[in-house]
Image (tube, rainbow, N blue to C red):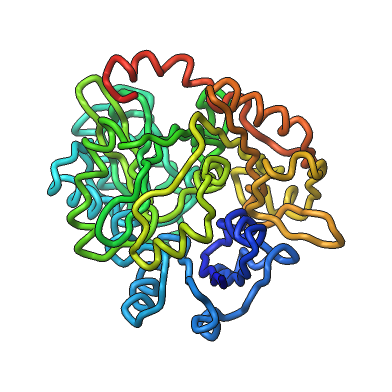
Length: 421
């Protein structure tokens, strides 16, 4: 089959390579001008995607800013995998997403939207509490902040800092959210236009830059996951309740809700109305059903289930020098070589923001070139498989967390007690 990928950043590169390994033909369009180096020399790139729509058997829209294009092509009869305008709004407009969550009966932390730093400072000052600051849209994750102080004074400090440095010509749009103390846990699934596709993906993300959950927030530094036959309690409390809305809008793609799980129930934090990254890269390690078959059936609305390996998988993101700050990465990390990939370990290396030249791979994009995956019957064996390969890879001055999956040792007993595993 022939697959056309319409992407913003080219982040589904590992999936494209997997499809080629299955014998399919793939072409890729990357929308963002700053990511035009991603995938060069690795995959067949095109400058415009619409002329290739009739060429493709399936068109894959892989990000949350492409929903309008996806639903337009789907309405014209093209087999498409991806979201829609509704899905884009769920992810990019946080209060819209929370409004829908409330309507379907999913618990959410109290939040308030602001378009002014001054008004947010006054709000927190009058209502002392522990808060989380999150920006709407797709701004750099390190701008968000999880407050530590019970009176919100550290959130006020960072708001005042942003007030002083923010470009006056650049609009600001963010929410201040009440902090919920619990265990972060995600639930995601494919949706075929009418119903969820089983099994259900359960994830534990590691968004902080450094081991132990220290440092600024990043797009993500690693994830551990497994598949559940029916999704369990977390799926029933959250994502399953979205079925009527997703069916009404003919959603055909992957969707995920990141949650904070507590003894009293799960609170939904945010949607990812698209493939997750590096979530997708780690799913590649767990799937048995060929991806070409899965995507084709999903685009046609015919996918009802697929086969996966039992057990666990983790993914460790190896980031380039200077990450997570793009100014530093552009100066010190972009273009550095990626060494150590060989015939024995390449099946665990998921290429993301890379380009290839003269047979060698180099760092590209915003600084997250590869994810190293490991699979095992236990979380510990999955960790060992991944980190044994991490030790074989050299990216000069690269950075990665050494504790992806460690949370399982500390949190699984509590999650089991609460009924979530």
